[in-house]
Image 1: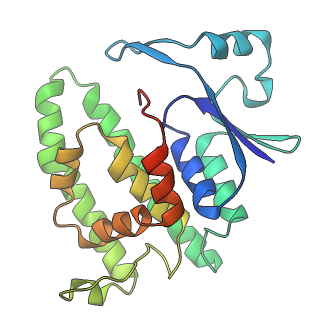
Image 2: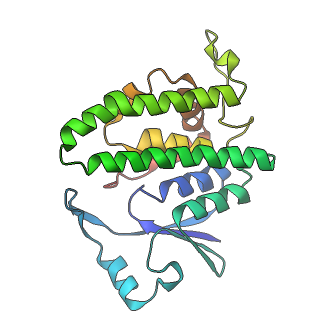
Image 3: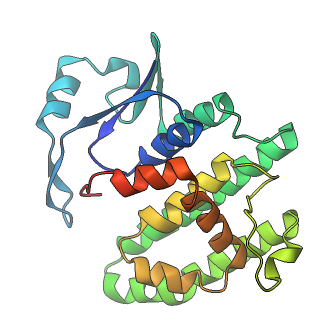
Length: 229
């Protein structure tokens, strides 16, 4: 039995949830309650988590979330959990090379997230965010889209009426597809700005559509509760 422990939010746990949902796996989705008092100062109330951490109960993850229980084993660190689940449920490609390519795409997304967090910490945050969404993010996504286009058989995606599923690597759902989907649909608060930044990215938009129309993922997204992040 799989048990994922995280806060009551999407954050660093949702990609792992989506992998298990897409695989049709049974898992316990344990969520510590969390109340956001002030996002600006990251003031949050998380009594149950703090109590468990203080008691030493979370020693196998060094007091960090998320972590995944697999029987008696505990796997911690969000990216390690994602890769473990992707391998377990055959979402890391058919060859070692495909697996490496999938991994590299996920690392690009991690780079984009890191760059965005740096923008949010700038003193001129308002102006920096405008530049991010209007210039920086479109440039990054366009370059990434071109990479995906060039590395896979996406030539016919530009044909009028094209309506076939497309994946980042090969012809089946992989960790890269789920990471891309979660990044472009869940990571940013300003959904309209993200849509604008991704407007000319035909491959990325197709991947998001393919993942979003996966029956299991679609049902999960439609029924998941609203959370603070």
